[in-house]
Image (tube, rainbow, N blue to C red; front, side, top):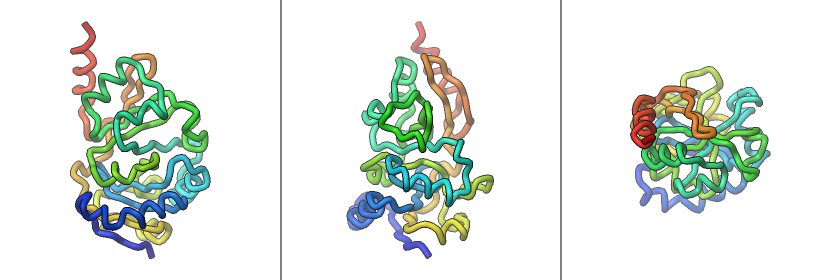
Amino acid sequence: MAHILKINSTEELNKHIEFIKKIILEGKVFICGTDTLYGLCVNALDESALKKIYEIKKRDRNKPVSIFLRDIEDIEKYAYLDSTSKKIIDKFLPGPLTIVLRKKDSIPDVLSKDYVGIRVPNSPIIRKLSMVPLTATSANLSGKTPPSSVDEIDRELIDKVDLIIDTGVCPYKKPSTVIKVIDNKVELIREGAVDFEKIKKVIEENDY
């Protein structure tokens, strides 16, 4: 049975930060609430920890996993940006958007081969925990409904992780919108918490 911490503010988080930091840096697995849904998290640069995520979720190894970063300024450490991606990032992040970009070599191939999905969530708790890039995949078994509260997390998952951070009910209660931006071209992968029409409008407003 995973250890459960109820944390509703960064002040509360500070009381447990050293304990959680140890969990992350030792390659252990934890579940935490975000702005969209509960995420299944490990250090995204730790290849053995990444393998645990795939095993726990029963996820196809060919499906990439996105990452959480603390700040938008961190994005260029891990991915290449063009003018369109910069416009979108400036407007919508932090927020419930995953932007898929061409990855840099700092991202392990186990996580993603050529591109990486990046989230800077509108959630101060998960951002503060992103002292290293964290995996940003929903806390559910593959094919099952992703949870927006601790009560909705599958018992099988709870038994396989080291820690659960209960931040209450996630504000959006739906997944992030996923877009891919390569060579200034934008492709919608999944409509979620951000209306794709709003993204297109921002791009069009700046294209003159």
